[in-house]
Length: 338
Image (cartoon, rainbow, N blue to C red):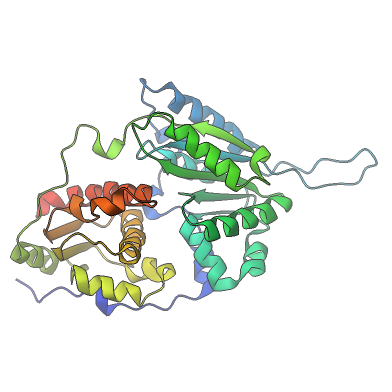
């Protein structure tokens, strides 16, 4: 066996604000997605209807400004679409496809990526940095933090005033009767100044990451996790508690840079994380790992016990459930090698 694998705790990247702007593109996992590669479920007609609606929306982005009666030009009123649906129904696939199909300069990022950008640049510089875009796509719009929600609503209003088209998604719980529509209502209420510009596009279905598939792979022995990381060039090996301590010292906007070039992550000492601040940092890290399609091996407790019931039943439950869905997908990718 080769020497022990390096650890994420040894990484503390410094990311210039310019990189944060340049990285507002669909993550590598979605580099090749297009409307043509989306496979609507025949049992869910809303999926095919969503493709048709979004293709039309993408084609409308960046249309020339209209004229007033006296010949003076005014900005085209920016439109918006909101994709409403549960986990794993392909909303991110459709959002990225919209980005690829639209013309002009576009920006794409998660809700957290945009709030981090405001934190790094300041509010008005962020408006200026994005104001000449034809389209801004926000994946996983979060409704559970009032301060950040107001910030994003204001940012979107400023961008819409400049003629920027907007597209957004957020997650709702699958199988909860009526909850998908409630999520749409919540979204429109929070962006009330913009609500009339948004069309709600419903995307029904089951989580494709779990269709007919088993629960997360069983955790492996510590020695197996260490061997897997050591034998995989570019993989890292970390104890969960040590990693959580390190994440507290690194701004979430730098988590993506922290996993640059990482080909696999092995975590030992997995156990339920009861502290909400710690758990939310793990959610951000899980999103970055999923974006980069980084396989995951765990040792200790079962992966689906990472977030205890008191968190899963709290206000951030959608974040935690989305994170568990994504971590499970990454663990399955590593399972044959573990």
